[in-house]
Length: 279
Image 1: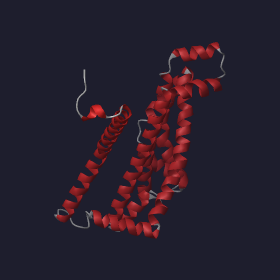
Image 2: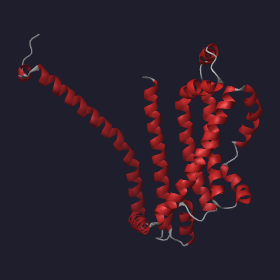
Image 3: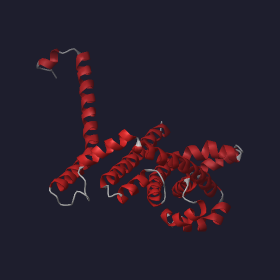
Image 4: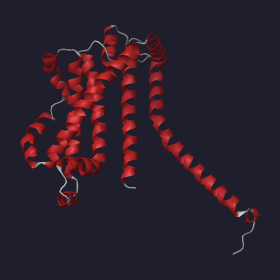
């Protein structure tokens, strides 16, 4: 079959380079369209918010305009107040989440590997995990007061149960052949956990970490709303007491943004490790 037209005179290498460039351009266009969808709903919500303020549906004391919230956020940033509250909240989140998730990881592995541990602790574990963390706050305040220990324990409790449950289910899902091979090679328990259990369960455990981190962040802000002298939640509570809804909305937006970044960051880690697993 004879090729006619101007492209028949092009060198083969130029045609290959042209095809490669077009493939890359199509890939970039598809990626842009996929990521641009993320901004549709926030922009739509912002437009509805601005319209509701301009139409005067609610008084200014109840619904502050987006421009007013932006100006307030600039003032809080300039004074350093927003950074200080955010720093205190992230400090509590870091310590509480680290303690709760590590304990949950260890406890989930033990329950998944040893039937005796599972049988002994499963009833109490399944009963307590049904109780909302917020319900423990009055009791924890009586035990620890309203100092830092109280907030860290609340976060640790919120992180412990999702991580334990995800780890337990992941360990139970490991093929039995893995354990048979470990038995043949007479691996000690520590090597069994570090060389077989943890590598085989990393993706579902990361999913548990992601869910636990989001829940811990929400519970921490709620606890700071109730009893704290600093933090994002306490900043919103002080704004409410002073009838400064603009400060409350700044706290709401910061809380949502931080939670979104946590979720997207751990999703990226999950995707990266998922690709590594199947190489």
